[in-house]
Length: 543
Image (cartoon, rainbow, N blue to C red):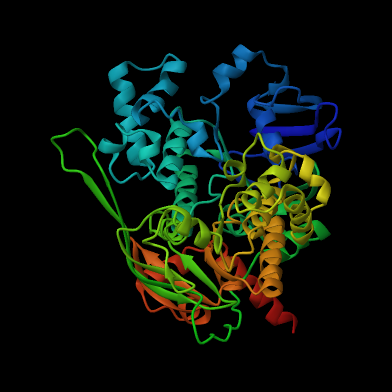
């Protein structure tokens, strides 16, 4: 008998939604010690199925039919008190965004202890001791310090480990992991996957792993379910689904995964469009009071490179390597302590006021998270025109330009009158790209612009960026932790580690024949490499 059995589950959406059912007639089982991956694009019903299992569906959304059987009980028929007793103890969940899952005002140790307190387990002293043990178990490097820290003091990977520790606190029978590796760098991602696999083996947990990344599926899954528009379109053993998919949708998702294929480098012009020389950025902060030494972080050290017309330079590295800091220095969202950032013969690292405003329009940024980079209270038309108006374009001309930009990025001009929340993540990112193009910049800095998007939307945005680059002859700095994406879109690649450029050269050279052990470690951590090798062998046999 299966540990969990979902039978013909349908979940109704409120009136006015784009479809009647978020999930329609979904059935699957989960056995003890098994890892079952649910794959699909945003809106496919993956997370909604998991939320139904936890009894955490949004207001106005409710199951309309079906059963969720766990140890002989239908979870859909349990009272809220019964579900409260079950959550955390029998079924736990790792949420996609750990920063929103953690209380920013509570220390890490107190948040883990709260899990035991909610179920009236252990004494306060025992709770703290167990919290420390859990932080050790999930591989945090300095648990004694981490237990006293606040969430903002930890990296993304460290926060994700804390959330895993909280989910494991009561040793649940089922662990639900909802996109736990999205937006993490490749080495941290590999560590999280290894951790989940290790915990599965040691605790005998069943794992329901929700993801849009088939590379992750290849590395961790026993079985796979593929969902589209709320329905299961394919299911089976992981190797079977990955190597011999039967449904066109599954094949399309697999085809959208970028491979380590390299583009030809562009011919370098006589003069670079952007020159960076010996750029330094150091952060200093006081922690622990006046009597302790300030914490000094050398985020960028002696960064030096040239960017040529029509070229894309990728910047790769782990979280904390200095990638985004370097990008923000280039666009002068941060002011570096030393060095030169020259565009159009002007060092913009030293100027301010109106002179900086005039040069800043030549270099624009597309941010990682379109949720936070677009004002939720402003209509799209306002978001796209405010920069133009600030630089002297009259309102009518600015609105006409905004409509043109929406067409350029593949959106209907009617989007002008809508708000950001009315769009999908991929559509919001297109709006972010349109905004960056509004002032006709010479250089675009894309900071993890596709990291949080599912594979098919990611492929669309990458195609859009490539098309815009060719049509508008743009130069681009492409910051990413995804080496497959870097290989696909970048002419040359900078590898950063602890603020330093440890490798720089043509993409084929850096990723095809790396010169440093660090670059090789990034390549080794790419998920799904074994699947790629098996697929290549399969294709070779068919020839």
